[in-house]
Amino acid sequence: MTQASARRPRADAQRNRERVLEAAEHLFAAMGLAAQTDDVAREAGVGVGTVYRHFPTKRLLVEAVIARRTESLLAAARAAIHDPDPGEAFRRTFTRGAELLGRNRAIAEDVAGGMNLPALPPGIKQALFAALSELATRAQSAGQLRADVCPADVVMLVSCVAHSVELAHRFDPGLRRRFVALVLDGLRPDVATPLPGHRLDLDDLHRLAARRGGH
Image 1 (cartoon, helix red, strand yellow):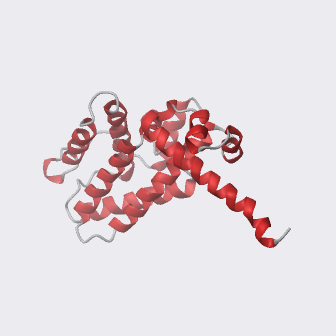
Image 2 (cartoon, rainbow, N blue to C red; image 1 turned 135 degrees about the horizontal axis):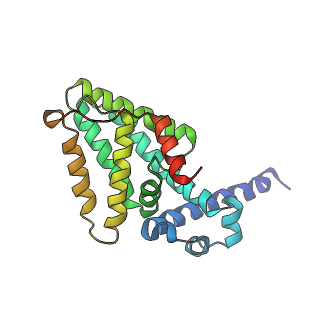
């Protein structure tokens, strides 16, 4: 066997994996978590066994799609940190996160059901939380975001928007834009009233998600 032919199966496997991910992203966006592995295989034009070789469970496939989409949000959040207008950078990133949910029903259902960031590799989750923290801190320092909001509040608000997105797929596509506008107005410092309760951190969000999941 030549070196080129030895590499060919690996390249074919990678192409099949990409086809499966693209098909899954399309179906999960349209059908949500109701889409099944058989549906993904048909959409990708591969056998079910090929899907299972790359993603032994449907949950792993869902998580791979979520990670793929969230990486684009992370890149946008990191780029927004360098925006000279911190308030606009924060608002744009929050809106983009809501749009990400709006384009993919499965992500919206996953976030709404988990009260947390979606299932992500720890590195992506920590990096996204760090980027959101910096965006919030910069906006607060510029007087464009209420001072008593913490990054975990932002994540929880994204979860609330996710719930509205999940409803919007069935009832009213305008709900996402409505809820995003309401949230962003509520985060303005000029209309802020003191917040009750204590500040959350990322560990608190993990504990809330685990408690909801019965772990």
